[in-house]
Image (cartoon, rainbow, N blue to C red; front, top):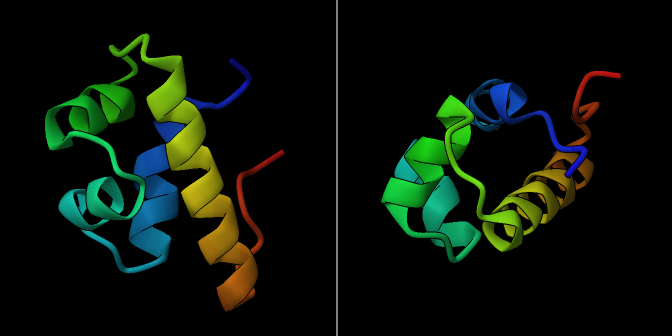
Length: 68
């Protein structure tokens, strides 16, 4: 998985979303969402859903997306 979990929190905050909001929008259990942000989850399916949700929202709002 090439998603940088440490960036999830920064990206969701840039969108003005709470952890619960991102969990809801990505159909991810809030506890898994917390573990993803901490880099402690190995749930690749949830990570992909979160990445897709963030990317779609960033495109829709004109934000740059994850750092390179």
